[in-house]
Figure 1 (cartoon, rainbow, N blue to C red):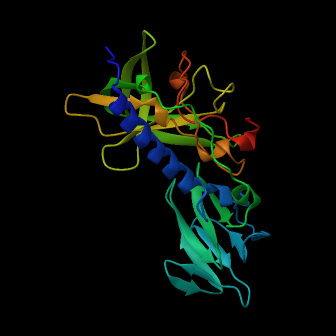
Figure 2 (cartoon, rainbow, N blue to C red):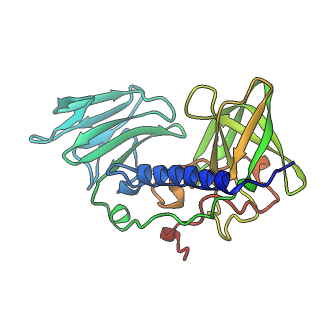
Length: 274
């Protein structure tokens, strides 16, 4: 049962949401955030040169290698490197940021593929960014659910914003909750931070007022009795909502909610939302 928030409670709820929204925007539009990406380059065993990064790049069984020309330099973990530099084998969803002047060259592994993704502060997408539209925060969209752990983590393969790419997550459990009188559940993936969870989902607003492919909701660690709060006001766009140079995962099929979640971030202006 939902109780009506008092006016002071509503003010505090709204202020807290605004702080969260500002932090989301700040990370996105940081000098080397996702809006600063200028290219998504897929590596193989052939040396390749890119217009937005120094050197010739390749990968193989021993990981990513760059051959820098005379006069070219990267700074990796605070140390200047020249000539040939070996980044080694990168973990899935891991990566290294190499500094090049005022740019950062992200070297990462996504969907089993090594990539180079330069980030330049003067990227047009970043310099033109005016913010992300969102629904007004409303406490009715903060619902209490129950986390149900699986007997063992379930390897779950999902698609990606890039056609043909797949991501695999070990889903530790699901979250059951009620919304608009319907009993629903979402498969949860590990989130950033000990015990935290993350759910990817779509709903009846997807492709209408919210981004069609996905939204993400971060959850605090469940309580000892499994209680967990899903605050859909904090349903956030992933980078692929803004740029085609992202490899974001798509929700598993069971996370397509049949209700309209009119909360959280909307389709970005960069995708034509007005």
